[in-house]
Length: 419
Ligand SMILES: *Cc1c(COP(=O)(O)O)cnc(C)c1O
Image (cartoon, rainbow, N blue to C red; front, side, top):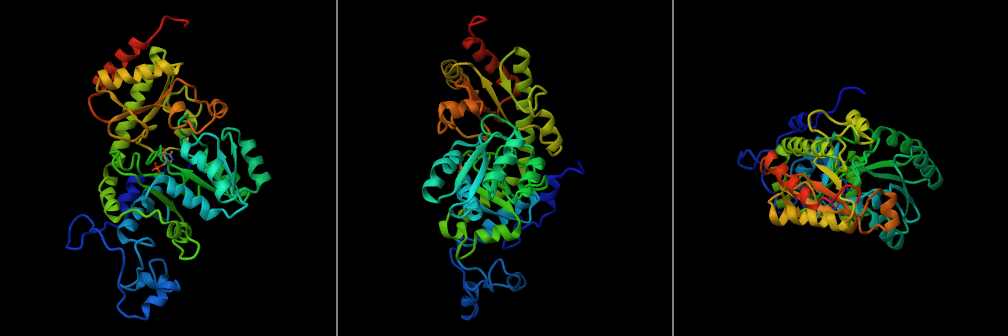
């Protein structure tokens, strides 16, 4: 592969937005509506001749915005920062990750169109594709095993899918997608490759690797504090602007708008995202290695034993590690639950809660929580066993303190060999 993309350098190179009074941070545009200086400007905005996306508007000053659901400059600035991080032309932020996913897929697909998607995806996305879309929009999805490239190829060909939808690192199996190969075969069949990069911000840059659109649940690592539900879409200018189209834009018409105050707050968290990812990854790697040495059933893409370790090492950017999530298989749901209870209630190790990317450790039993939308068979085929705990490693406390807590809990739930 040629020179690797550097998201930190790319973000630093993008324009710094100053505040209205020369503040070092951008101001919040807290208006839902915008004036025009001449009355005859208004119809031009509605005709698309003036507005944030037309060439005239970029050269004009003032009076070219319409309404906050359509466009807000503060939300746009946050989107622009994310776009620079993802190496895309443009980006825009939404009220949640799932609304970003729904908006992107509905923008690509009309009633009767098809999607090919990975069979190991976030439970909410799975329900959206499997149940909601066929019922409400007539868009159907074929689910495939991404590691079987021939099966993906065949599914794209047979369905003439508009979109190949994947997660860069899958939830909760931590299976890594071969983005360049999947992009190539998607494009061969006229499909767009849409990648949910929630698990790997900074670590993977899907668009420089060949994808068309990147989606984030900003709720997770990008926020980093488990206090905000938010999402984002990064892609070409033409695609991002199509989402805001007054007649057929899914963001404009379905309205999952991000509040500019939230967008402003999130812009202050992006500068340390790289540092946070590095620390999450370093800790997850240390834990995974030590667990593997102990003989525990641990899955982490940074371990040489992980089936796509080499693949991830080849694709990933330098300096951010292999991610902050690992899974630990305790065999049964009873043992998994006991372990988590000890870790939360008797130690300060972390919390039994869904979600990820928080500065504290979050643990959940995937089969009975975030992947419970999948049937038992679907869980089995996706490699989700009943005792599988997904751990999103936090940043607090010392590594040795946390490791001692984990070992203590593991020793207490351990049974005699062979049982
Ligand atoms: C959480 C999550 C989503 C949904 O995002 P929300 O912000 O909760 O709407 C989508 N994809 C992945 C991989 C997630 O982890």
